[in-house]
Image (cartoon, rainbow, N blue to C red):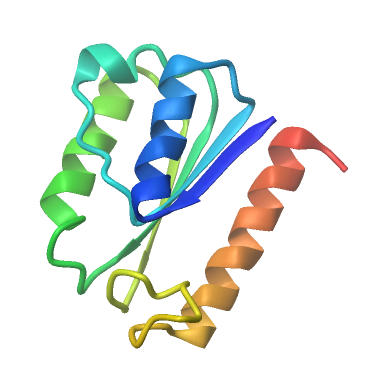
Length: 117
C-alpha cells in the first residue's frame, strides 16, 4: 500500500508514512517540516516532487526534510522542477504539462519498484 498526495494531501502522504505502515510514500509539493523524532518513525521509502518557484514549500523546508531523513537513515528521493506550486494540477494556472508528465512517470516507476507489478 502506498500513500500519494498533492499540496495539502502531500503533507498527509508524509503523515501516512509516519503514522502507518505504508510500503511507499509520494509527496507532491506538500509540507515536509516534520521534526526528526517523527521522521524516525518512517519505515517506507519516500519520493518527493518539489518546485523551485514555490514560495512556501521551498528549498529551506525541503533541505531540512532531507537532512532529517538522512539523520534518521531513511530512504528519500527528491526531484526538483523549474516550476511553481501546483505544477501537476491541470486545473491550476501554474500547470506545467512537461513537469507533470515527468513527475508522474517518476512516481509510477517508484511505485512499481516498491510495490511490484
